[in-house]
Each structure stands twice: as structure tokens, then as C-alpha cells.
Image (cartoon, rainbow, N blue to C red; front, top):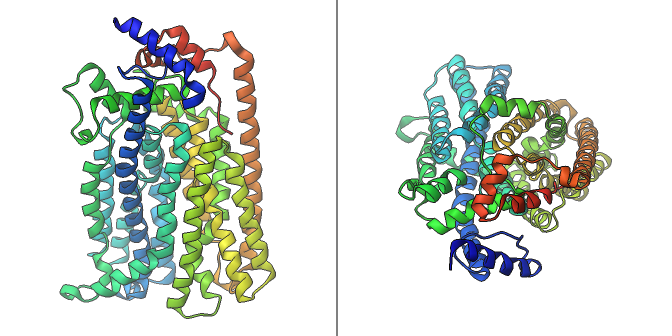
Amino acid sequence: MSQTSLNKTMKAEITSSVEQHCLPPGSATLSINITDRIVLERQLVRKLDSRLLPTIMLIYLMNFIDRANITAARLQGLQDDLHISDVQYDTVLAILYVTYCLSQVPSNLLLNRLPRPSLYIGCCVVFWGLSSTLTGITTSYTGILICRLFIGMPEAAFYPGAVYLLSRWYIKKELAFRSAILYSGLLIANAFGNLIAAGILSRMEGVRNIRAWRWQGSMTIFVGFVSMWLLPDHVSQIVINCFYRRDLQPDNTYWLSAKERELAQIRMAEDTGEADKDHSKEHALEGLKMALKDPLVYIFAIQTTFGLIGLSFSSFFPTLTKTLGFSTTTSLLLAAPPWLFAAILCCLNAWHADRTGERFFHIAGWFWVIIVGSVIGISSMSVPARYVSFFFMTCGNAGSALNLVWVSNAIPRPPIKRAAAIGFVSSAAALGSLTGSYVWKSEWGPSYRPSMMILIGALVISTSLQFVIRNMLIRKNARLTAEGDAFEADRIRVEEAAKLQGITFEDALERRKRFQYLY
């Protein structure tokens, strides 16, 4: 049977099985039947889940421990050793956000263009671990300030880069749950990170006559080198090599077969009706310009900034549990259950968001739960009521975990624009975190009523803007439907999608017309 006849036969088989298997017409070009296609796809996703997600979660944990170390180090004599004041210590904490905010957009643009993002992310982890380690040999305020400034640059590559890398491998109805698993690593780190950091510092105190806080960063360097081997590269780069030059497969994807790599690219083309790759003319600056011309990017950035102000209690959670009146150790232990509950809820919420394809209520709904928790915290100082309010407040992270996922869904193509948009919105998130650090003033304790009122106001603004985004995407979907045959798509990407799926350009264009934004 010729390849053309085979493609026609397979298209007929798949069309008759669409409703049963939830696969679109023209969804397979590999020389396998529909049942084998489903088995192969499950195998591919399972391999990605078992390799990509644990690696990113481990890096996330190292990132949190490195950040927690600087606060725990204060208890281990950092200020006395370096002879710095409280104001200087606050500056040491805040200076990281300067380079962190400024570096996220260029980092994501660079990540999109590099053929080996695994090496890029791995090197960034090594460099921030190295900078963190160098913090341990500083002897002055200027030295630690410079180290913290340099930590911000490589750290900027991680979270927005990780979300973008996930968006290159997982389709839109898989992305929310996987990103939530990544985000749940942060929540688990919130539960145990301070205890882990304190434990490391206590065990390392005096080893080789070195203060404990000076050991920070060494473990992160090791994780960075390992991640270079574990993380996959861009699926489009891999499949192009596999499709045209099978002898040029990247070394770090030996764990995927040739068919799995090809299927990975086909899945991404099916997801939006366009190939997930940039044109030669779509360089980094062009991608940034496209992102900055899109009003959605600015609205996402502003709502994320206010959303992170509303979540600023996360950095001060041990302080909040301390207001219950227990010892420091007990307060740290009491901080763990709300975060563990939030981590479980985060994954369940994302799983349901993927199943339904809905975004707004899966994000805004949990922000409203924070508002309820804040109202309880404002209204009562009793231990049971206040502890229950902490559970309500941490639940809001289930919504925040989907924020960059929604950006990726709302701005899917071209990849260079998506990378710039994710980096830009993530930078805004860092500004929100920085602003939020000034919300929890010690003189407002132990009730922190003014802080919680600020949280409520910020979350009202954030959810209002999310409602605006939802309506804009609904209008975009209506416009796509109304345009019909007048719909204009990117011809080059549609042609590439047709080639990957083994269908005609006309069939691929029809499929592209059926694309809808998730809202």
C-alpha cells in the first residue's frame, strides 16, 4: 500500500473513532493503528512525567532551600559575622529581585532559541548554586550584596523557563496538571523548607571550623549537573532531527524512541493546528515586540502582580503561625499541614481544569477562598478560628499555580511570543512578591489586620482583571468562529503541521479554524 493510500485509510479509521478516543481527525501519521497510537501516546506522556517533572520539582526544592538559608542564616550569626545592620540585611534580601525581575524576559527568549535548553537550565542551576556557595566565603556587606545580585540572574531562568519547557512537550489539556505538580513542589517546600534549612544549618555548624550558613549552595551545584542529563530539549528540535536526519538525535533523549519523538511533535501540531516552531524571521526581539503589542500580556502582568501581593503571606507564614502562641519549633510544625493540604488541592484543581478546559473559576475561585480566610483572620484571634483561616489562605495557591499556564494557553503561537509573554508576566509576579514583603510590618502584629485588608483589596483587583481576560478570550473565540472561511492563519506553521500530520494543507487549515482559547 502506498503512503498516500495508507494516510487516507488511517484518516478514515481515526475519523470514525474520534468520539470514542477524543482524538481529532488527521491525528496520526505514524505507521500504526489507532489503538497503538493511544498506547504509544500514553507511554510517551508517562516517560515525560517520570523524568521531567521530578527533576524540575527537585530544582524547585533546591531553589527554596537556598532562599530559606539566607533567612535561617540570620539565626546562625550571619549578621554578627558580617557586621551588618537590620536595614542592610533587608537590602541583602531585596537586591536579588532586581536582577531576578530584569532577567526573566531575556532568559526565556534565549531559552526558546537555544537547541539545548537542558544545558542552559542546568548551567543556570549550577551558577546560582555557585553564587550561593560564594556567599559563604564573603566577609563584608558589599561581598554578600554582589553575590545576591548575581544569584538573581540564573534563578530567573528557572520557573518561567520550566513552565515554557513544559508547554513545548505537553498539550494544553495536559499542561495545567503538570504545572500544578511543579507548583506543588513549592508548596511542599513551604511546608518543610524552613525545617530542612534549619536542620542543614544545625548539622553543618562548625564542620571544618566553618560556620553553618557558609555551606549553602553546594548541594544545588550537584543537582544542576544532574539536571543537564535528565531534562529534555525542545520537542521541535528533536523531531526535526528525527524526521529529516535520524543520525542527529540529541544525546539526552535516548530514553525516547524515534516514534515517540515524532509523536511528540505531531501532538503539539494537533493541539493548535500549527507547528510549534518559529519562522527564521521571528527572532527574539520580534517575539518581544509581538508580546508587548498584545493587551492581554499587560492585563495578565497586572493581575499577577496584585495576585502575588494577595499571596504575600506565604513568605511570612511561620510568623503567622507564631501568633498562635506556641514555641518556635511547634510553630514551624503547625505551618506544615496547611501547605500539604494546599499541595494536594493544587493538583486536584489542576486535574479538573485539564478535564474541563476551564481556567477562570479554577483560578479566581481559590482567590476568593483567600478572601474568606482573611476575613476570618481579621474577625477573630482565637487559636482554632485563626488556624482554620490559615488553611483557607494557603488554598489560594491552587489558583496561582495555573496563572502562567493560562498565559501559555491564551498566547500559544508563535513560540517566541509565548516565551516572551511568560517571562514578562513572571517578572511582574516577582514585583508583586517584592511589594508584598512590605505588607507584613511587625508593628501590625500579632493580628496583622491591616495586612489582611491589603490582601483582600489586592485579590479583588486581581480577580476583576481575570474576569476581563476571560471575556476577552470569549470574544476572541466568537470572532474565530464568525470568520469561518475568512480566517487567516500562519501559512508556514499550518503547512508544517500538515506535513507532520500527513494531511493536506486544506485539511490542516480546517483543523486550525477549530482552535479555541481556554477561558
